[in-house]
Image 1 (cartoon, rainbow, N blue to C red):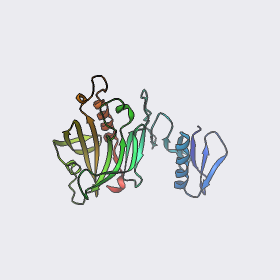
Image 2: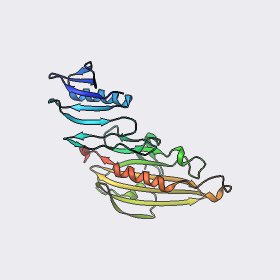
Image 3: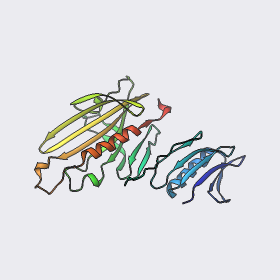
Image 4: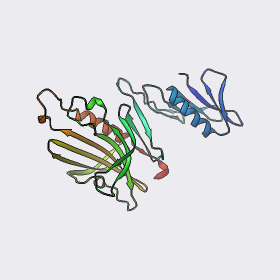
Length: 254
């Protein structure tokens, strides 16, 4: 599909297709034009180029197949096209604009996720990304495994990963990307089932964020030899760490 442009008309703002003199629509504000143009670009898998009043490009957002959102700002080009990868990575932006994070497009999003394993009246709200069939089919990983971003109040200023877990087997601190994280791990087993959880937490103003990897697997010894394969834990952990590295709490809540 053709790229979309947001341009100034002097007394208003317009959206038009690249290479065409025809104006798609006109609005009174730039923000309205950008919002409408973004929806069109997402649906059409095209690029959105936003111009200033002087006609110069201020920002370029790519929603095309095979790449995820990127910006061109102040003349500094930064392209994130993913080459030689079978899966498309996308940017998830929370509806309340608390944060953004990259996720692999074959993971299943639950925007109304609630983590309820901490006991009565201790539910944690969040968004989860369910592990796809690639890691589950004919393997010993169960379908309730997921990666999630969760948040809780941080009024006391003590944002710790252990607050997201019932028990802790290992904990520490680690810098990933531009953020400092507190992390904790837990492990439980019984009746052939294994529950492994890792949480990386970071403070952002009045909120404490926890990025969780929840793995529910069955001991491979409980299956007939050759019937089920061991799931690819290392690949899942790599995806998890890439998501953590991309995590971005928005400045307006810092």
